[in-house]
Length: 66
Image (cartoon, rainbow, N blue to C red; front, side):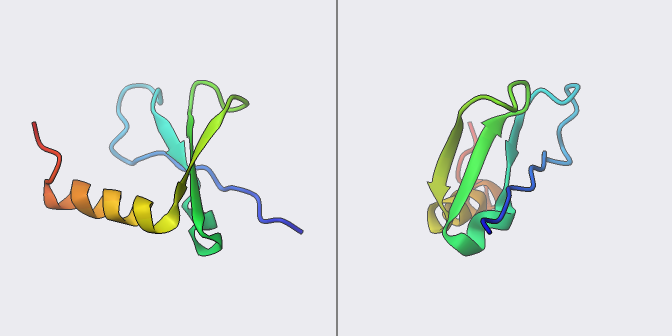
């Protein structure tokens, strides 16, 4: 049986929930799907788990500041 995504939003989401959701529970399977919380039945983007981890590490270290 395939593992189903468990969608989560950032705890920093303060705009009424209009943001992206990720299913990090699938990272152990090698991918991390991302979707628009306003369209849960719409398309998802799927990232390689190692690429997602590098992206999150970059966010945490301030690599993407304006």
